[in-house]
Amino acid sequence: MSRNHPNFTPARRPANRPTTREASSFLQGDEVMAGLLPTLEKMAALQADAGRLLPGVFTTCRVQQLREGQLHIAVPNAALATRIRQMLPKLQAGLREKGWPVDGIRIKVQMMSGENRVPDRPAAQAALPTHAVQAFAELAHSLEASPLRDALQSLVKRRS
Image 1: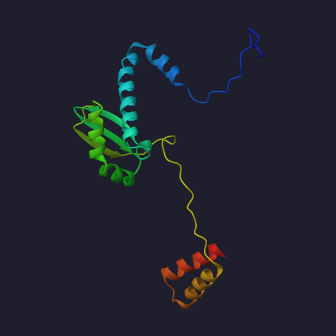
Image 2: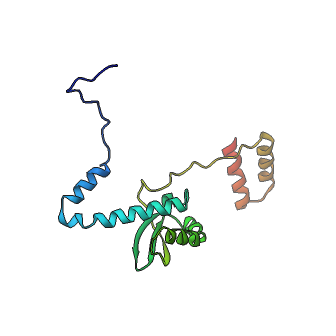
Image 3: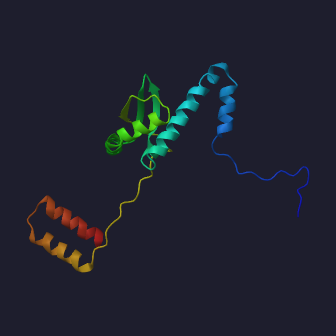
C-alpha cells in the first residue's frame, strides 16, 4: 500500500468552465445575487423534473419561468415544439403530480446557445449501386432541360 507524502497534491485537469460550486459561492457572496439563488434552484429542479418526464425529448429544451401557473419553455426549433406540444398533457400531469403548480404550458421557439444545441449530424448518403447511378445518368441524358434533369445530373456527379 503506497501513501502519498503529506504535501503531495494530485494534478488536476484545467477547468475550462466554472464549477457549480464556484457559481454558488459567487451568488451567495453578494446580497443582490443571493436573492437569485432560490429561484435558480427552483428552475433547475423544474428543469430536471421535466427532463425525467420527457427523457431524450427535453434535453435541448429550457425552462424559462413559472409564473401564475404558466410554465414557459424555450425549444430550439419548430419541429421539436410540435413534438413537445403533443406531449403537453403528459408533461403537465407529471409536473402537477410532483407538486409543481402548472396550470398551463407555453412553448417558445428560440435560438439556443451553442452548448445547448443538439450537434448537427452529417447527412447520411445512401449507397447507390453502380448500375443505379448509370440509370440516373441515362435518364438525365434523355430529358429536356429542366430542374429534374439538373438534379439528376448533380446526383450522378456526386455519386461518380
